[in-house]
Image (cartoon, rainbow, N blue to C red; front, side, top):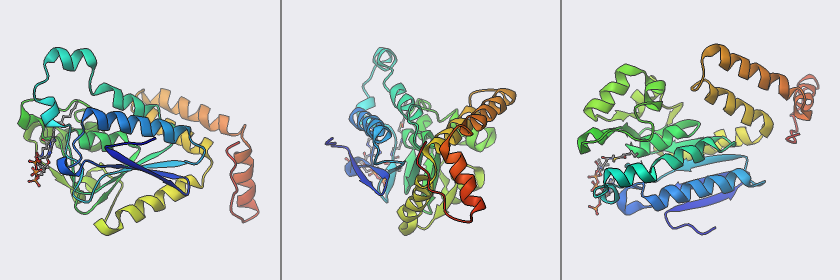
Length: 258
Ligand code: HXC
């Protein structure tokens, strides 16, 4: 499918979705959000994809929702069309793991988009923030919720109330990102992680993703039960037999997603 605001490349079982509105620092307009959703759906359905990377440019992952597009919207338009709700549902519906590779600005909706991914790898230049407060509004796609889960109340309140940015080192210290690497190594690092994921059983990676995500939705006892049931279920797969046999035979496992 041809896209105008993103590029999509598939190689070695990894789909790389690159946000591509350089003149607006990858600001998220409706078209871009719709194209990202479409690309996720296609990648999730494709036999040639086992892991997805979402990235932007060196200067900006995304500088937020497109302010020029938003500026004249009325309450009725924003509320009745739920303009920004759809994209989170499309991320949540994607069964394959999604890695955000973030360089430069990840602000407002950009930070929120990164947090919709399963984990974030950042370059040393990354800057995260929820500066919506400077525009007279607040975060609307998870910046008050996912960020609080990731970094705790103190820093989430600080960022949402003052609009200050968090650099990559602070983001790693605070649990917002899993790794920080030099800018030049960002895509190599993200691909390395995606390669590792792509080599596992897709049944197991989907279950791991589902189990971790469940921890955000339910109380601990329910989450533990959910995890245990998924664990039990994986013993019905050939990949479980293969993975454990390969360990005993001291060889690489050959998973077949069965
Ligand atoms: C539209 C944007 C934009 C945005 C940058 N641009 N961010 N356009 N929406 N969010 C445009 C600028 O207007 C400019 O276009 C070009 O990109 C380059 O930006 P500059 O400001 O010239 O670059 P720089 O001086 O390097 O500053 C970078 C920046 C700044 C610090 C990131 O652009 C900035 O503060 N942007 C806004 C960040 C923000 O407030 N994000 C939250 C948005 S609200 P021209 O044509 O002038 O060259 C949000 C709500 C989400 O995300 C919730 C949804 C439910």
